[in-house]
Length: 160
Image (cartoon, rainbow, N blue to C red; front, top):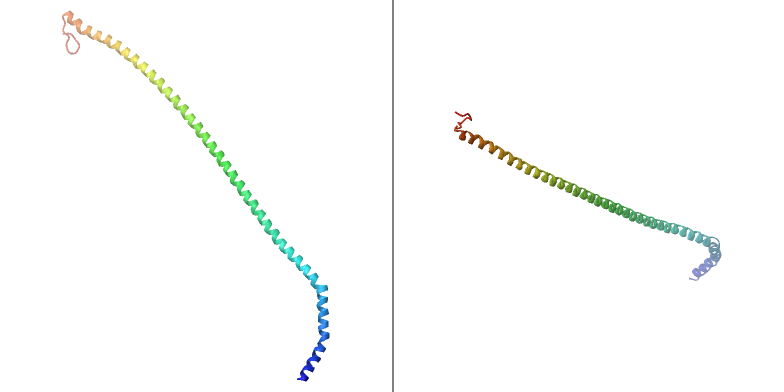
């Protein structure tokens, strides 16, 4: 066992320069490469993470602009619809007024025609009345004259 311990001691003693070289190499790595590499990696991460965050911010801004655009589009459509509805209501009102005017004019013409027709009817009645009286007088005189003269009228209108 002494032999093993002695071999182990020699091995450790022979490993000391390797350990010293390893420690020196580790310290040199830390001083020369590690800090610069860490700084570059941190900068790269910041840039990539910053780019991702910027992209997310750009996406959010684009979505906000899209939402604003859609809102303005909805408002514009609503405004157009309201204008169209107001115009339609105005046209309906103008149409109703035109119909009312036409109806009033037609009613006035009908009333005037009725009045004229009633006047014509009254005139016709008066004319008929006077003509019927004249005709009645002629008939009476035609019937009574021969009777007064002693003649009897015969069917056919000729005295016998």
